[in-house]
Length: 259
Image 1: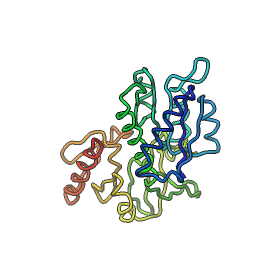
Image 2: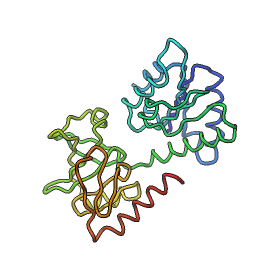
Image 3: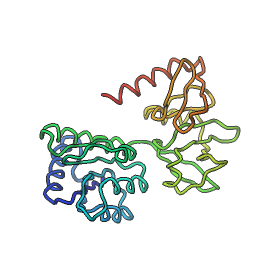
Image 4: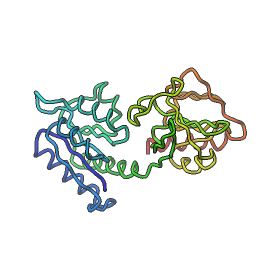
């Protein structure tokens, strides 16, 4: 079941967005599998998140004066859920640094042409469906098993007895974990080859026998060396035997971001 949230202080706008959601999604999404939740304040939506795991949130940036603003609500939403697809819908406001930091998938203007508005809604709904198929892996921290969304993984390193999974630091709060040796690391007992087979179709590359990376967090690349987000002082090397496949996957990944 896809749980869809719309938060706007004007009920008529909620009606409009919901109508576009249903029309834009009709050709690829079974409406029986979707439930739409309507909220007129950020506080209401955040309270609902205690019981509902939303698949996507459409958030008005400029909520009614005197209530929690859309940007503040978005920050709180992202703190509570790193994986929900977040879409800003606004009448006139331009993106601010706060908006960008919460990693919205789209920034949709209410006054844009109807065809363009509907196209953006459809793209967001397709992203929601894609996210639902993103794989997870099982890890352990202090003997407790946890399921990790692959989007939260920066890289995976082969160890002597187990695989070490390096998460984004911001994800540690989401998974309610504490850092190990000052780094957000989770143990995984699966083999690197099995993990690569599972994660390769979802933006992972295997540049070296010792580690695989999530291309989403690749920040610089030069010849046979690269750096990753949150590890700017560490250089990762590409093995000659893996360079062709790794570079092909890298190019395909970044091309797909603009398709």
